[in-house]
Amino acid sequence: MSVLEGIVFFIAAILALGGALGVVLLRNPFFSVLALVLHLLALATLFLLLHAQFLAAAQIIVYAGAVMVLYVFVAAYVGNVEESLTPSGPLLTLAPWFAAALFVELVIAALGTGLSQINTEGATVPAGFGAPAQFGELLLKRFLIPFEAASYLLLIAAVGAVVLARRRRGLEHLD
Amino acid sequence: MDVSWYIVLSALIFCIGLAGVLSRRNPLVVLLSLELVLNAGNLALVGFSRMWGNADGQIFALIVMVVAACEVVVGLGLIVAMYRHRVPIDVDEMSELHG
Image (tube, rainbow over all chains, first blue to last red):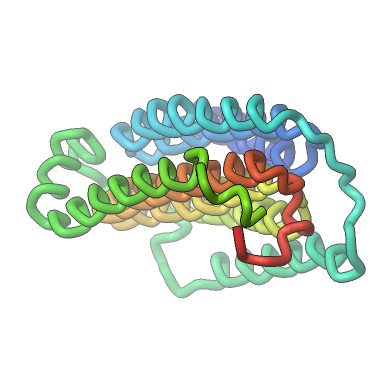
Protein backbone atom coordinates (compact mmCIF):
# COMPACT_ATOMS: atom_id res chain seq x y z
CA MET A 1 0.00 0.00 0.00
CA SER A 2 2.59 2.49 1.11
CA VAL A 3 5.12 1.48 -1.55
CA LEU A 4 2.50 1.73 -4.26
CA GLU A 5 1.45 5.13 -2.93
CA GLY A 6 5.07 6.27 -3.08
CA ILE A 7 5.47 5.11 -6.67
CA VAL A 8 2.27 6.89 -7.74
CA PHE A 9 3.36 10.02 -5.87
CA PHE A 10 6.73 10.18 -7.58
CA ILE A 11 5.32 9.56 -11.05
CA ALA A 12 2.66 12.25 -10.54
CA ALA A 13 5.19 14.65 -9.00
CA ILE A 14 7.63 14.23 -11.91
CA LEU A 15 4.81 14.75 -14.42
CA ALA A 16 3.59 17.83 -12.53
CA LEU A 17 7.09 19.31 -12.44
CA GLY A 18 7.69 18.48 -16.09
CA GLY A 19 4.42 20.16 -17.02
CA ALA A 20 5.27 23.22 -14.96
CA LEU A 21 8.72 23.51 -16.55
CA GLY A 22 7.15 23.02 -19.96
CA VAL A 23 4.76 25.92 -19.37
CA VAL A 24 7.61 28.26 -18.50
CA LEU A 25 10.26 27.05 -20.95
CA LEU A 26 8.41 26.21 -24.19
CA ARG A 27 8.50 29.01 -26.74
CA ASN A 28 5.20 28.29 -28.47
CA PRO A 29 2.22 29.33 -26.25
CA PHE A 30 0.11 26.51 -27.68
CA PHE A 31 2.56 23.90 -26.37
CA SER A 32 2.62 25.76 -23.05
CA VAL A 33 -1.14 25.24 -22.79
CA LEU A 34 -0.74 21.51 -23.50
CA ALA A 35 2.01 21.28 -20.86
CA LEU A 36 -0.36 22.92 -18.36
CA VAL A 37 -3.00 20.26 -19.14
CA LEU A 38 -0.43 17.57 -18.29
CA HIS A 39 0.45 19.43 -15.10
CA LEU A 40 -3.21 19.69 -14.05
CA LEU A 41 -3.87 15.99 -14.65
CA ALA A 42 -0.83 15.05 -12.55
CA LEU A 43 -2.01 17.42 -9.83
CA ALA A 44 -5.45 15.75 -9.82
CA THR A 45 -3.66 12.45 -9.14
CA LEU A 46 -1.88 14.06 -6.19
CA PHE A 47 -5.24 15.32 -4.90
CA LEU A 48 -6.56 11.75 -5.05
CA LEU A 49 -3.57 10.57 -3.00
CA LEU A 50 -4.49 13.23 -0.43
CA HIS A 51 -8.09 11.92 -0.13
CA ALA A 52 -9.58 14.90 -1.98
CA GLN A 53 -11.75 12.96 -4.43
CA PHE A 54 -14.24 15.72 -5.20
CA LEU A 55 -11.49 18.27 -5.71
CA ALA A 56 -9.66 15.93 -8.10
CA ALA A 57 -12.83 15.47 -10.15
CA ALA A 58 -13.49 19.24 -10.15
CA GLN A 59 -9.88 19.85 -11.17
CA ILE A 60 -10.18 17.58 -14.20
CA ILE A 61 -13.63 18.76 -15.29
CA VAL A 62 -13.32 22.51 -14.59
CA TYR A 63 -9.62 23.12 -15.13
CA ALA A 64 -8.28 20.53 -17.52
CA GLY A 65 -11.60 20.60 -19.35
CA ALA A 66 -13.29 23.98 -19.49
CA VAL A 67 -10.56 26.48 -18.62
CA MET A 68 -7.98 24.85 -20.90
CA VAL A 69 -10.44 24.84 -23.82
CA LEU A 70 -10.73 28.61 -23.29
CA TYR A 71 -6.92 28.92 -23.40
CA VAL A 72 -6.68 26.83 -26.56
CA PHE A 73 -9.34 29.00 -28.23
CA VAL A 74 -7.53 32.22 -27.38
CA ALA A 75 -4.13 30.79 -28.36
CA ALA A 76 -5.60 29.82 -31.73
CA TYR A 77 -7.41 33.16 -32.12
CA VAL A 78 -4.48 35.38 -31.28
CA GLY A 79 -2.08 33.20 -33.23
CA ASN A 80 1.06 31.52 -32.10
CA VAL A 81 3.59 34.25 -31.53
CA GLU A 82 6.85 32.55 -30.78
CA GLU A 83 8.88 34.63 -28.39
CA SER A 84 12.56 34.37 -27.69
CA LEU A 85 13.38 33.35 -24.16
CA THR A 86 16.31 35.71 -23.77
CA PRO A 87 15.58 38.26 -21.06
CA SER A 88 14.60 41.66 -22.39
CA GLY A 89 16.28 43.67 -19.66
CA PRO A 90 19.10 43.37 -17.17
CA LEU A 91 16.63 43.09 -14.30
CA LEU A 92 14.86 40.13 -15.89
CA THR A 93 17.96 37.94 -15.78
CA LEU A 94 17.49 38.04 -12.01
CA ALA A 95 14.01 36.45 -12.19
CA PRO A 96 15.09 32.76 -12.11
CA TRP A 97 17.57 33.49 -9.34
CA PHE A 98 14.88 35.26 -7.34
CA ALA A 99 12.59 32.25 -7.78
CA ALA A 100 15.37 29.86 -6.73
CA ALA A 101 16.11 31.92 -3.62
CA LEU A 102 12.41 31.93 -2.73
CA PHE A 103 12.31 28.14 -3.16
CA VAL A 104 15.24 27.67 -0.77
CA GLU A 105 13.54 29.93 1.74
CA LEU A 106 10.20 28.12 1.44
CA VAL A 107 11.83 24.72 1.89
CA ILE A 108 13.69 25.94 4.96
CA ALA A 109 10.38 27.25 6.33
CA ALA A 110 8.51 24.03 5.51
CA LEU A 111 11.09 21.60 6.85
CA GLY A 112 12.16 23.65 9.84
CA THR A 113 8.60 24.14 11.01
CA GLY A 114 7.45 23.23 14.49
CA LEU A 115 4.44 21.36 13.09
CA SER A 116 5.03 17.87 14.46
CA GLN A 117 2.55 16.21 12.10
CA ILE A 118 4.21 17.37 8.90
CA ASN A 119 6.47 14.31 8.82
CA THR A 120 3.57 11.92 9.16
CA GLU A 121 0.97 10.80 6.66
CA GLY A 122 -1.53 13.05 8.41
CA ALA A 123 -4.40 12.37 10.75
CA THR A 124 -6.56 9.32 10.23
CA VAL A 125 -9.55 10.47 8.22
CA PRO A 126 -13.12 9.14 8.30
CA ALA A 127 -14.50 7.22 5.35
CA GLY A 128 -16.35 10.06 3.61
CA PHE A 129 -13.44 12.54 3.79
CA GLY A 130 -13.32 14.79 0.73
CA ALA A 131 -16.41 13.19 -0.81
CA PRO A 132 -19.12 15.33 -2.46
CA ALA A 133 -21.47 14.79 0.49
CA GLN A 134 -19.04 16.37 2.92
CA PHE A 135 -18.32 19.19 0.49
CA GLY A 136 -22.00 19.99 0.08
CA GLU A 137 -22.63 20.00 3.78
CA LEU A 138 -19.67 22.31 4.48
CA LEU A 139 -20.51 24.66 1.61
CA LEU A 140 -24.13 25.05 2.62
CA LYS A 141 -23.60 25.27 6.38
CA ARG A 142 -20.25 26.55 7.47
CA PHE A 143 -19.05 28.26 4.28
CA LEU A 144 -22.35 29.60 2.95
CA ILE A 145 -21.16 33.21 2.64
CA PRO A 146 -17.93 32.39 0.74
CA PHE A 147 -20.01 30.12 -1.50
CA GLU A 148 -22.42 32.95 -2.35
CA ALA A 149 -19.56 35.42 -2.76
CA ALA A 150 -17.92 33.02 -5.21
CA SER A 151 -21.12 32.85 -7.26
CA TYR A 152 -21.27 36.66 -7.43
CA LEU A 153 -17.60 36.74 -8.42
CA LEU A 154 -18.29 34.32 -11.29
CA LEU A 155 -21.21 36.45 -12.46
CA ILE A 156 -19.11 39.64 -12.39
CA ALA A 157 -16.26 37.92 -14.23
CA ALA A 158 -18.60 36.65 -16.95
CA VAL A 159 -20.10 40.11 -17.47
CA GLY A 160 -16.63 41.68 -17.38
CA ALA A 161 -15.28 39.32 -20.03
CA VAL A 162 -18.17 40.11 -22.36
CA VAL A 163 -17.64 43.85 -21.85
CA LEU A 164 -13.86 43.56 -22.41
CA ALA A 165 -13.97 41.39 -25.51
CA ARG A 166 -16.90 42.95 -27.39
CA ARG A 167 -16.38 45.06 -30.48
CA ARG A 168 -16.52 48.70 -29.50
CA ARG A 169 -18.31 50.65 -32.17
CA GLY A 170 -17.90 54.38 -31.95
CA LEU A 171 -14.67 54.20 -29.99
CA GLU A 172 -12.36 53.70 -32.97
CA HIS A 173 -11.42 57.38 -33.04
CA LEU A 174 -9.65 56.89 -29.73
CA ASP A 175 -7.14 54.43 -31.21
CA MET B 1 3.83 9.71 1.76
CA ASP B 2 4.65 12.35 4.35
CA VAL B 3 2.83 15.64 4.04
CA SER B 4 6.18 17.47 3.86
CA TRP B 5 6.82 15.95 0.41
CA TYR B 6 3.67 17.56 -0.90
CA ILE B 7 4.58 20.90 0.68
CA VAL B 8 8.05 20.89 -0.88
CA LEU B 9 6.59 19.94 -4.27
CA SER B 10 4.11 22.78 -3.92
CA ALA B 11 6.92 25.22 -3.11
CA LEU B 12 8.83 24.06 -6.19
CA ILE B 13 5.82 24.50 -8.50
CA PHE B 14 5.14 27.92 -6.95
CA CYS B 15 8.67 29.09 -7.70
CA ILE B 16 8.61 27.76 -11.28
CA GLY B 17 5.36 29.66 -11.82
CA LEU B 18 6.83 32.77 -10.24
CA ALA B 19 9.83 32.64 -12.56
CA GLY B 20 7.44 32.35 -15.50
CA VAL B 21 5.34 35.32 -14.38
CA LEU B 22 8.45 37.45 -13.95
CA SER B 23 10.33 36.53 -17.11
CA ARG B 24 7.87 35.66 -19.91
CA ARG B 25 6.60 38.39 -22.22
CA ASN B 26 3.57 36.78 -23.84
CA PRO B 27 0.55 37.66 -21.63
CA LEU B 28 -0.99 34.25 -22.40
CA VAL B 29 2.03 32.49 -20.92
CA VAL B 30 2.02 34.91 -17.97
CA LEU B 31 -1.56 33.82 -17.25
CA LEU B 32 -0.55 30.15 -17.57
CA SER B 33 2.28 30.71 -15.09
CA LEU B 34 -0.18 32.39 -12.76
CA GLU B 35 -2.24 29.20 -12.94
CA LEU B 36 0.85 27.30 -11.81
CA VAL B 37 1.19 29.60 -8.80
CA LEU B 38 -2.48 29.19 -7.84
CA ASN B 39 -2.30 25.43 -8.27
CA ALA B 40 0.76 25.25 -6.04
CA GLY B 41 -1.26 27.08 -3.41
CA ASN B 42 -4.07 24.57 -3.88
CA LEU B 43 -1.71 21.65 -3.42
CA ALA B 44 -0.40 23.13 -0.17
CA LEU B 45 -3.97 23.75 1.06
CA VAL B 46 -5.05 20.19 0.30
CA GLY B 47 -1.85 18.81 1.85
CA PHE B 48 -2.41 20.69 5.09
CA SER B 49 -6.08 19.71 5.04
CA ARG B 50 -4.95 16.07 4.89
CA MET B 51 -2.47 16.71 7.68
CA TRP B 52 -5.13 17.94 10.09
CA GLY B 53 -7.82 15.56 8.85
CA ASN B 54 -10.07 18.58 8.35
CA ALA B 55 -11.83 19.29 5.06
CA ASP B 56 -11.89 23.10 5.44
CA GLY B 57 -8.69 23.40 3.42
CA GLN B 58 -10.33 21.60 0.52
CA ILE B 59 -13.16 24.17 0.53
CA PHE B 60 -10.47 26.87 0.39
CA ALA B 61 -8.91 25.11 -2.60
CA LEU B 62 -12.30 24.98 -4.34
CA ILE B 63 -12.76 28.73 -3.81
CA VAL B 64 -9.24 29.31 -5.18
CA MET B 65 -10.26 27.37 -8.29
CA VAL B 66 -13.29 29.66 -8.68
CA VAL B 67 -11.09 32.75 -8.35
CA ALA B 68 -8.63 31.29 -10.87
CA ALA B 69 -11.43 30.67 -13.35
CA CYS B 70 -12.58 34.31 -12.98
CA GLU B 71 -9.02 35.56 -13.44
CA VAL B 72 -8.62 33.48 -16.60
CA VAL B 73 -11.88 34.77 -18.08
CA VAL B 74 -11.00 38.42 -17.48
CA GLY B 75 -7.35 37.96 -18.52
CA LEU B 76 -8.25 36.21 -21.77
CA GLY B 77 -10.85 38.92 -22.44
CA LEU B 78 -8.06 41.48 -22.08
CA ILE B 79 -5.84 39.56 -24.51
CA VAL B 80 -8.67 39.38 -27.07
CA ALA B 81 -9.24 43.13 -26.61
CA MET B 82 -5.50 43.75 -27.17
CA TYR B 83 -5.64 41.71 -30.35
CA ARG B 84 -8.72 43.60 -31.60
CA HIS B 85 -7.03 46.95 -30.97
CA ARG B 86 -3.90 45.71 -32.77
CA VAL B 87 -1.75 46.20 -29.70
CA PRO B 88 1.26 43.85 -29.91
CA ILE B 89 0.71 40.76 -27.73
CA ASP B 90 3.66 41.56 -25.51
CA VAL B 91 3.53 42.77 -21.91
CA ASP B 92 6.57 45.00 -22.45
CA GLU B 93 4.65 46.99 -25.08
CA MET B 94 1.79 47.72 -22.69
CA SER B 95 3.21 50.68 -20.87
CA GLU B 96 0.05 52.77 -20.71
CA LEU B 97 -3.27 51.86 -19.20
CA HIS B 98 -5.55 53.66 -21.67
CA GLY B 99 -7.38 51.40 -24.07
